Image (cartoon, rainbow, N blue to C red; front, side, top):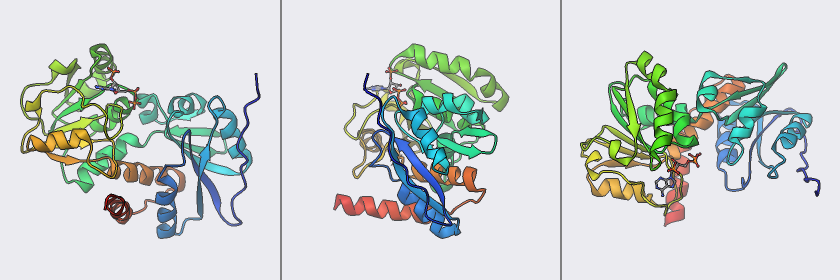
Length: 295
Ligand code: ATR
């Protein structure tokens, strides 16, 4: 077998500390832009790069990054599960997610966290102004993206969380896994196949199914969308997603996942630096860039 070639990692510029987003592919990631803005805003000496890890070479790439003085990583597709396995210590939310999107290099080892769910919750509550407490929420999908947001959603005490998935057994498994957390939060948790959604409008419908802008619409009763519904797609792009357009055609308010991206980055920055950056101006700037790309 050919040895896997690892990327060369230059140390940080004098006086700065090294961070990166590691993935494959990773060149498209907006995280370096976002964290450069956060560093500029807060004055934190953060130097943040893209880091392409070869498939099969994730752990070795992380070790090389640490040897080069690296202090923290965001982890993206397809390495979030491997990062979970590599961490020496895990936050409760990373344990619940079964995946890690944030690694911090501590003196006693690698700390693994997951900021995706909090990113979603902050975007919905702070940026979009919709309360999760007491809300009826429908979550579409039961893969890694869905699992990662359940505990942070439950922590806001919604009245009801229904998880539906094309493959019902995977939704059932998530309902079993989070039953105790839901009971503790006073939330009615249920789910199953697409028909498990109640045939009436939810307050919030979150699309956590995998896909791209022109991905197939997940099967879902049209009656779950109403005039008071926030239809939230974790995806984003220069154009509204198929899911967003569908929800809007049924009278719902639609939002993409760009705010979640910025909010999860802000939380990662806080995990590394113990300083909370302002997300709103960075989100506005990214939004303007996307609008310009569309024009
Ligand atoms: P991720 O980490 O992005 O969540 P994943 O773990 O592979 O990726 O999960 C993909 C999710 O998208 C699953 O819930 C999947 O449904 P199945 O479990 O039935 O495979 C869902 N999904 C993908 N394509 C879909 C489609 N065309 N319609 C409905 N659901 C889809």
